[in-house]
Image (tube, rainbow, N blue to C red; front, side):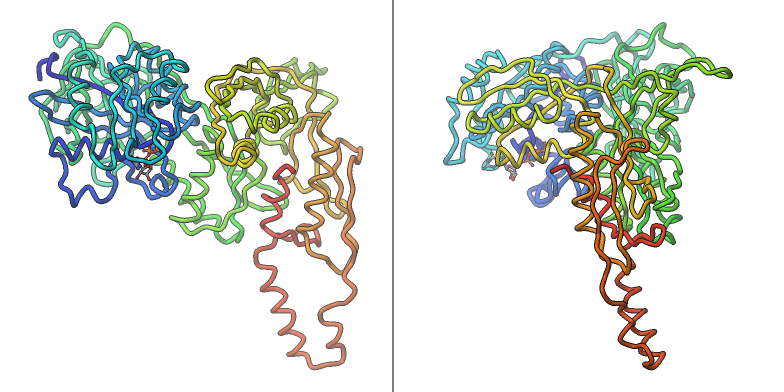
Length: 597
Ligand code: GTP
């Protein structure tokens, strides 16, 4: 296809503003799908994506419109996947900015719009859902201008649901978004935008060719990954697979090259011709690193192998989460897993539970701390990365601890501002900015990531009845007065419950943990002390009183079979418990205890 007949664009939208619905509508209008095939949303093809309404993996579709080839690049819609978003945007020349006519501009929209502007995109504003009675398109148009600073005078009024404005959108893509540039005679440079594992095709790689031509049969090299492969398929999605012989500069499509492991295909890598390589890779490649870690353990110890298999299978399709084996005195064998963020963690956890039918215990999520160790007689001073409180080194060797910080942007209607400010303050936040836009406050806060990973987002949503929106990016490490808090049940430390906390908040957190555990752990035959401690110092304490009666007491002298039946019954009730020393801790306790009050 000649360059001037190509348009590459993505759709930027806040969650639920109608990105997928619009994408489906564009596909349908341009003939990619029939009405019947439309009935299931096409772009969000995973169940969990559908249920949560979140796009996890980018997909791309080629559309034909009035003699032009339009490549629609779908982008993930959550902060956890910000790097993948940046690569998808780098593959395009423009974007549709979809804003809900009733909801208006929200924080997540902003983050992606600014990224898009950084990529020099031509942005076409689309005010969607104008069919809703609560739609206020003129107010939203003003918001787009005031808040984002984009000219919205030619924003398209649309309803993806009822099919209003679809032709205008397609025409605007052709007229307003520039054609891609790229020298087809230069050595091949193609950006790896995304990859996924397909049981029939192996690893499928989504590419944007920046220069040169990518052909079937060509030997290619990954410049960051360092491996070489023979291209055995080249094609595009309409959204059904269509095979092609080549993809030229400016084009978007997919290739396969008999690659078995997704780890070989890193998002943002440059693909070049192995025989005639490009002099330098494309800018912007970054190795993605997990930022949130937690332990995943099977509730039933016999499920360990099943968990290992399931995790390995999931990992086939998601190179951004990591896992290694971990043993815990309380929980036995399991895995320490790393994720891009809490949502990513929840998605994996949910898939393991649902698709693989596993019952799991999740330990306290932790961020990665930098621990500065003093030198000793035998060892030099050094810095270690710590992501499991159980591995905390001897405190006397620690010079200082640094923790990751984020900058958060929060949008909130005025009436909830007070409680949101308090929440941020309680989480050690430093206010950087507070401005008003329309009836809403825009807050900027610096916060320790550690204070955000637990339940910040949930709290924010519940305090604001769902009206606040939240977005963040990391801003580096800062020293903090951090300590490891251990939880002792019946005088034994339960490693899965230990966590790293700020000293100033330790007592409150410790007390909260002990109080919740007191309610969560059933009574036993004996008195159980529950303590929170820093080093050897107990900072909070609760006691679970002893049960008065032995369940079998009334059987004394009774017949043995009845007694066994009772014991069996008791055992049944214990199935979802974890024996710890001689105390049984129910599965829910591990997660419930970690929720902050
Ligand atoms: P993510 O995939 O999370 O980014 O969400 P999304 O932006 O793709 O939203 P989606 O297309 O799934 O739409 C969210 C909800 O809004 C769905 O219930 C849609 O049916 C509805 N919706 C989308 N477009 C319109 C519209 O034009 N009018 C009305 N009334 N509802 C719409």
